Length: 522
Image 1 (cartoon, rainbow, N blue to C red):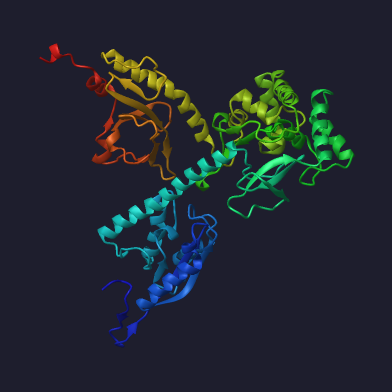
Image 2: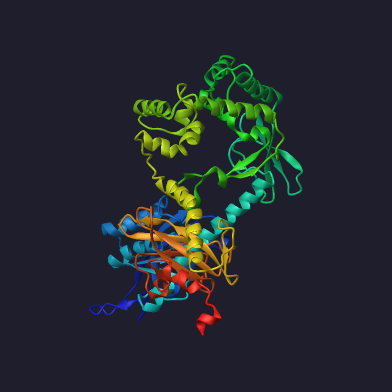
């Protein structure tokens, strides 16, 4: 008899009704997933099986990527762990409503907590009974992976769509800035009016562009550039003058060195649209992206500052740091850290005695590296950014080594060794992927691969780095026919289905790729 059905008390001979709680969650997916509709489907499911719903846990407007912020689910888990529940079942609409966790094991873990406490979890809209059978376990695992993959694919599509809008000259979030305004336009580019602070577009096909603000603000912006470039006045002096005249920023606040500095370096004042300086994908860590990954669209807005004077201001700002040695810049940064107890780009820009944060980033490769040199470690661990940057620099060298290894045994490889993919013997193409090692909090090692499916090489050479991410650990040779997905996750032990492609070195690959002459074959 399935676990959800009523059972009979042998002493009283009466049927006991299963008492259950329902969990519902809505992000912004689709109307069919609204909490009301989920609850309605769950109640029909319960009524058909004689299940009594005695409590509701509802997370409305919450993403399923992480448990953070999902107070209802956290409260459910806490109640279960505390043993204060008076129900023996949790009803959920489907696997994705439980969560779209990027690690399927996390979703399984929360369900395991319930099962361990004697509380089953039923997915009402799924076509399988969550009864612990091998079939249910397999299907449920696939559903969890699909739920996470859906979020990843959606994130990639949203990112690509936002990038295209940036290139077309549309604004993606954030305030306009002093001297500029957000203007609403329809799908044909016809202006519909200005958006006030806090206002958002309400029609999906409408877009937002930046337009020049009031004339008095434009005059002040140009005045700031004039004072900085032609009069040689420092940012803090310009800020003091503006405050003395009673002029406020676009946020209604007094001017500071930092706000003047940001105005002087922001490319929107010359009409350029720049996006993806930072990213916060899939609710993971917020990262500061490399400039080469920024999406730029020059000259898509009406400029209120001439490009010549903007470039002159940037040159002056960059040149200030060149007067100082590396040791002097770090000494100033270390002193600031000791006085403030932490560092950030804003804190640096607000300090009159230091070069700008952009100067530190330019001089030392990144702000993170500058922080590390003075002993500051941010709350968020951004080391992986540096690792990724290092691996990108390593890629051409690895590709060149592989090309040389192929040629050493007589293979004919395209002369352009920097290209990826490269063609070997005019017969097949290879591409090289270097994958970072990601230790988990439990000490296990994981490698997450992302293949560029647009390259479509015949063989993908995966260079798996060791735990230090300094030297290769081993290699995988994946034929194109066996790459069904653009992503793959490797553990230390992956079973025969994946480890059959694993090699300690590429010597075997060089040997089998070498051409065999007919005379030798005979």
